[in-house]
Length: 257
Image 1 (tube, rainbow, N blue to C red):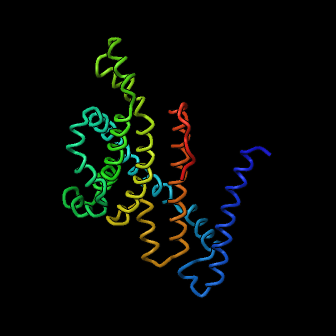
Image 2 (cartoon, rainbow, N blue to C red):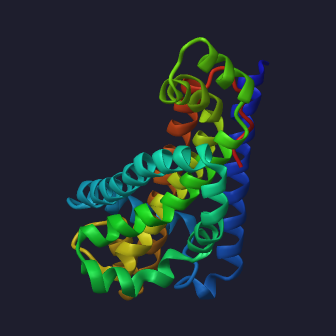
Image 3 (cartoon, helix red, strand yellow):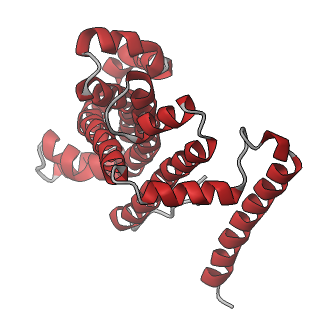
């Protein structure tokens, strides 16, 4: 039996253990079924959700907001990070403010975003971008700091301008660190988008549907939408890992955790 089949069985056994534990706990505490529905009740709710006419809009809206905020942060964050990494003295000067804003939960800034941008999509996208921006900046700058100075100097000696050396040498040296920042930020993007939908409210979105199910005390449906959101994040991570292998074939990637 090859390693891929063994790995596949391990994943399957893991889910069997999780579902089995869930079924046992829900049976033992069946008097609290209103709080912890059994797996079959959640499966029935998922069937209803997948047959609903709004699921596509809910998923599409959440994905759209997530990607809009994520790509805005990715473009600006990588550029700013490469710039700061090229000027260590400037980075040292801005290091404390960057760490402060990175460490401040974006949910604590929720009232400020609402006051300045309202409760429409622009504020949700802006909060997502804000949460991702500082992670990408710091990882991009870190990659530049740890790039190989010898290769950069050789490029300049052979006639490359500083901008060309940055583009063709430093950027690729820093790319593994940049990708780590982008991967971490992707998870943050989905989390913040769903939280924003729950806080601000919207017509469509998985966060709004989770809030609706909670308000109506429909626990099977609540668990169903949580599972759909988790699957969305899981497949986003799988797709990113696939693209990472294509983008960085020379880097030995570690298992996702």
